[in-house]
Length: 93
Image 1 (cartoon, rainbow, N blue to C red):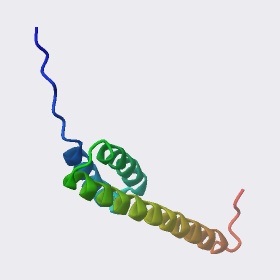
Image 2 (cartoon, one colour):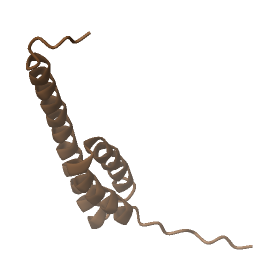
Image 3 (tube, rainbow, N blue to C red):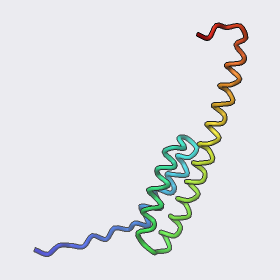
Image 4 (spheres, one colour):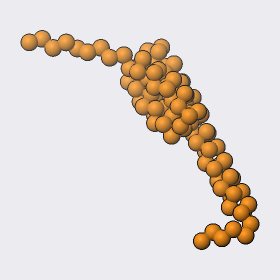
């Protein structure tokens, strides 16, 4: 039996994960981080022009995801502190 060698284009896979990472950064930043890391790993497996673009997209997705994740935590903490102090004489516990 002759085995066929599979030609997997990791550049396309990394490119897709990079785009998904950017999109997911605006909806669920934690998923954007995960997809960005996967895209970065996949893009490093080949040295083509497409894999270089995939690496850039994955890095952009990672940076956006991290920034938006930190911003969402900051906004949640801000509104939590405002709502806790805004109750006045409301018994908490």
